[in-house]
Amino acid sequence: MPKFAHLSDEDLRSVISWLRSDDPQLQASEEPTIKPEPSLFTKFLCLVAFKPIPYPKAPIPEPDTTNPVAYGKYLVTGRYDCYACHSADFAKLNMEEPEKSLGYCGGGNTMLTMNANVIYTPNITPDEKTGIGNWTEDDFRKVMHESKNKSGKALRYPMLPYTALTDQEVAAIWQYIRSVPKLCNDVDRQWDKDL
Image 1 (cartoon, rainbow, N blue to C red):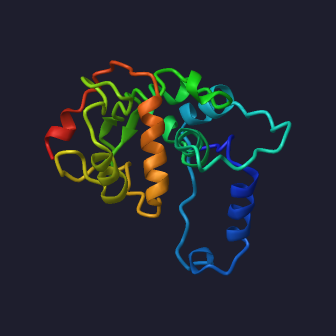
Image 2: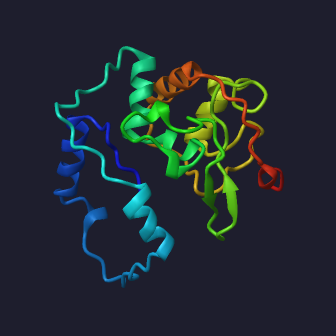
């Protein structure tokens, strides 16, 4: 579960306003809920690995949307928490200083498909050999808006299309990702070849 430790105060107010709204997505449902049954390992992680983050000591301002790299950094580390999945290990994330997370944006984190098959997140650093260094901005836009990889194949869950992202947001994320230090991390993407 993302913690959004770097979400701006204005974005947080927007989320709260939406939660208090009459939006149909928020209406009560007759659907029965499933009682959560966290495993012992999950409970352990919640108590030991995923410690609370200190409350901010000062307001968190809106990002400078005229600076694409700064805005992209905010989107990757604040609003969407892209770095959390695309780094090396959830247990080694640095929520206070995301860029100090193990394998920051270099991929390899363990995820599960809808069928509970293990997959590993891709390296999204600008490394030409193991990351997305040979991609174009249009390749990246297709991933974000259409959920298709560079060769046009559909991405698998848990990566979903971010169709609500504006072109400015996609461009800013792209510019920021291009500024992240390259990590040579050849993630096992065998499952991707089976598509």
